[in-house]
Image (cartoon, rainbow, N blue to C red; front, side, top):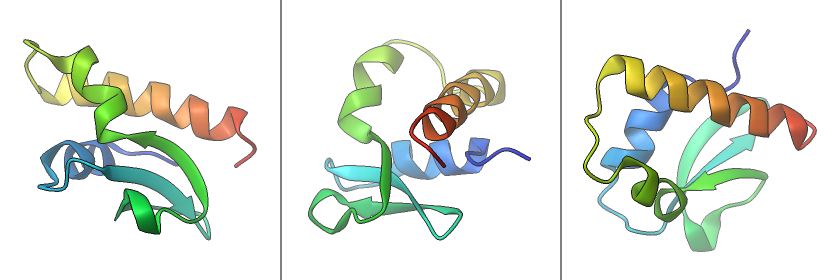
Amino acid sequence: MALVSRDDVRELLDSPDPGATLVLVEGRCAVLPEERAEGLVIASRRDLEPELAGAGRSDQDLDRLAGRLDGVARDLGA
């Protein structure tokens, strides 16, 4: 079962907070402000914006990114 979903990535990218951060807390992903990011930090919105500059946000793009972030979460010990 994936830890990071397309919806998690969409929520992070659509957050109005430029410091939004995707974290894993108690086995679930959450998007929190950078200053409140407790738990396992997976990525920040700032980390992802350059990668998506000029690219669409199709479901396929979001799925691919979610898969990569899921790998990061697992590599970090989730």
